[in-house]
Image (cartoon, rainbow, N blue to C red; front, side, top):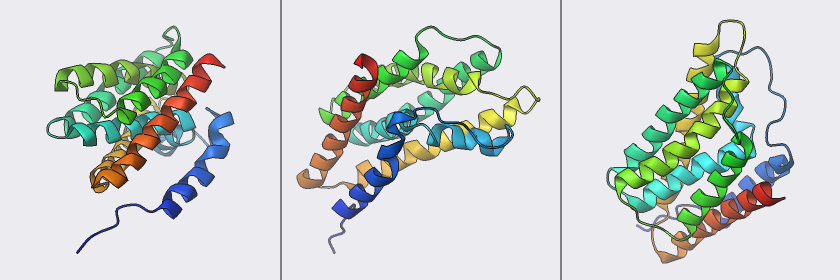
Length: 196
């Protein structure tokens, strides 16, 4: 039995839901800084959503150890960047680094670039440092930093899994075109954010 992994209606619905938030990369976050507010931080910034889904898509294209290594590297190094931010250490060029992550990861997905596992881990890890630092700079001052960090790590992992699921379910050349188009769209948003 042939399965249809994703439909055009699903893609259009996701675009309609998320595209309005492009103008608000980091809108105000709700409620006190807890596990839940940490969880919501990555999913309320369209730049974070695109980058984290792109990591999953790219890992699905590479396959093998990349399926777990690249998302794991992203989460681990993102947490390191987050803890730097929680200590008040702001990395230079955080927002341009995040925008560059969209551009580069999008291009890697769009071109289905196959790199060695270690090279891919270095790329996603480098960009994760910027994403994590952005999360950490908005961490609570009320002692709930660990819960907040666990929250943004969990939602990041969920976004990676979304990308992995979409990529792995896109079997056949026709569906892979949609994955590559998603990469091109991500790269385009990154280019706009980086050069606008």
